[in-house]
Image 1: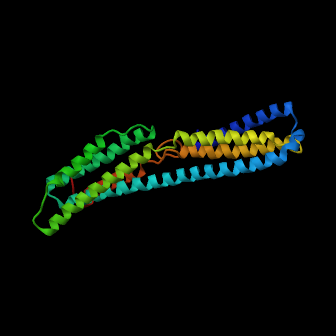
Image 2 (image 1 turned 90 degrees about the vertical axis):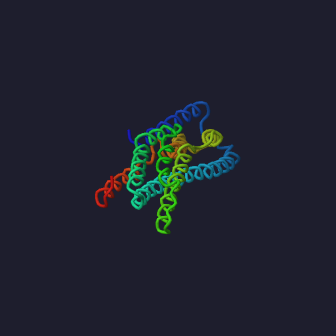
Image 3 (image 1 turned 120 degrees about the horizontal axis):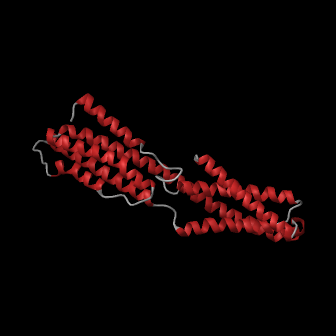
Length: 261
């Protein structure tokens, strides 16, 4: 089932549950008899809905921005891996091949193993760090006498450090969802808004079904979107490893067009 259908089914389920509660409340007391409480109830309802809407919108926007930032980090890391692959060309053949093999193995490791771990919000293992060390080892102790050689070695070191920094940021983002305290605000807050809606009187029974259904459906959709975007590499809004697949293609192109392994 696609995320669109999941959102629709979830929203309709919430609306159906809300309308069922409205029907039960109407059996106990008709909405026209509750209109006498509307002056106080409306003020309370407006206050709660405004506060809740601000919090929910802030959380949803933040989750969306975090997802976009996570996507940018994947392209930053993949781009730096390609630069490492290029920078290795200036090194002696043995060192070049060692760095390029480690870069390729690292990229494949991210796609085949780390991505699945991030998708399930599991700790990412340390094998990727070992491959980073393998990339760094050939240039760690090199000190060319000429300035050009020194600059090339420094460039390779900088690129590898940039990969390590992007990796740390990616893993941090993969594990940072909403805190339990925030969900405690969002879910009970929605129930509180719904409870206040039930105290308001309406001109007709049908009108109360329409109002409660529309508001419940909108809140349900926003909560569903927040849940799907909570972890940028997981759930319905998960980022795919497209950047790393492209990096592998560029590795092949570099080897084919400019010589390599």
